[in-house]
Length: 197
Ligand SMILES: C[S@@+](CC[C@H](N)C(=O)[O-])C[C@H]1O[C@@H](n2cnc3c(N)ncnc32)[C@H](O)[C@@H]1O
Image (cartoon, rainbow, N blue to C red):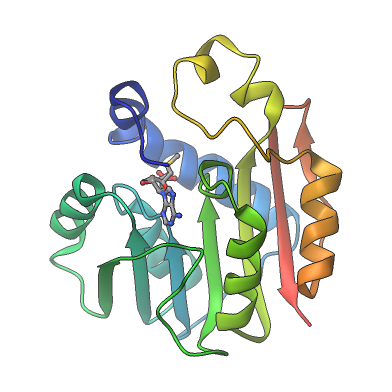
């Protein structure tokens, strides 16, 4: 599901970059994130494209494929990363990823799964395109934020088939991942790393 104007504004600026760099990545490091020097990365639902830059600068990957379903975000992310080599940005959905199996060393999900009605299919697809032992970095919002908070109610999210912490963890295991510990804030946010078996 695409962003409404409120969330588009919130997620296309410096504040969002700051949260990703100084909060999301810090959480993943505490959970045991490994560097991925010269690796190949995938950024699902890349938004304004900051995750692409961070994959290179913080994890050391050489190439990043990124996609989004929203042409507005594709325009912004292409402009933001035009100076970087090794980046390919396409219009694609996480439920049907246009890449062969066993392609990526690391995949980033910065706040995307909760925008997808069939998030279970998206996880199966992500698992398919990851190499064995590759890491899926997850930073997600939970129903307490999406459904009950002032800020969440001003955004556009699917209302059916939402996931709780245990539903997300159970599906990751069912998709074939091994899980790190989770960092959870109330019923609002979760960070974890899922490694392909
Ligand atoms: C909350 S934003 C996060 C954007 C970016 N990852 C960030 O953290 O700033 C969610 C993004 O996921 C995209 N999106 C929604 N459904 C998608 C799908 N099925 N496949 C790929 N991207 C999707 C939206 O267009 C939006 O850009």
